[in-house]
Image (tube, rainbow, N blue to C red):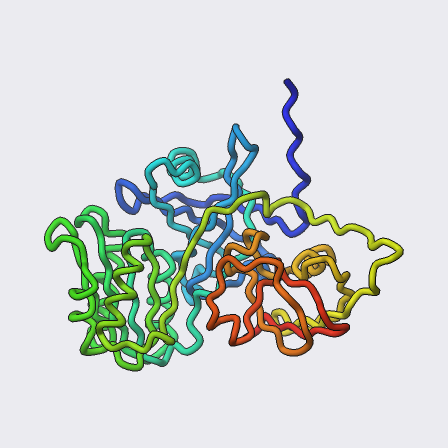
Length: 357
């Protein structure tokens, strides 16, 4: 039986060579990608963002998975080397394949860095909470805040045991170098049991008021962390969390835009601010904004193309538009004007969107 040919890769897909693979713990490895000279601009990123990797699969041809960038944009090597950190998960095809197969010299297809788990003001005091491999975007935020900002930072990091701690040596060094700005609280389940909301709340209560909190980790940890913050007196409107879901479909496939029929309404106009540039494009009424931008080789951020992640989130500045599906944005975020570019279709003749805020 002949296999179904794979879809053509989109013009927006990038290819990076693996420069190094680092064993962080028995269950976690960092993959360091080399950015080709002259292509640094296309791989600029913010602390807390992620890469989407195309992982080969004999069954489906490939699967797409998002992995947070554990490198920091202010590192001397950040322009030429991107690092993602992958922890094995039980029955997780992609994480196990990456840990077992990727080696220096290999090449992988990726999408440009994206994500909205980012910090606007590094001079403010912060609370960072991480569980297990949830440290990956948090360590990027932490290093950037220490390098770029002036605020005080409390990191609460929960793991199963001491052998599970990722970036333990780095955290120790950062704490020694910044004793007045950084407090690291390691919580080991092997010694203290699971961290309950009451325990987390008691630990954070002295510092929780009026601080932004950023958290990432497994679902049960995130629930306990959020409940703990509430008990501590934290402002729940200042809590940010990174949530990854499995990507269905193929976000690496080329975008195909159907030609409008004779009875279709004339296209709208989209005015899009992206990377300090303004693009004015014709926007077919039945076509998501992201597809229009990618078809015109405008490198808008995205990952799943299904409305289930926040990578393509942008802000509706003026005009009317609606989302065909929203599986990730909270009601408060929608009230603030956030929309998903991959699901957005126009309802007025002119719509203004920004990715810059």
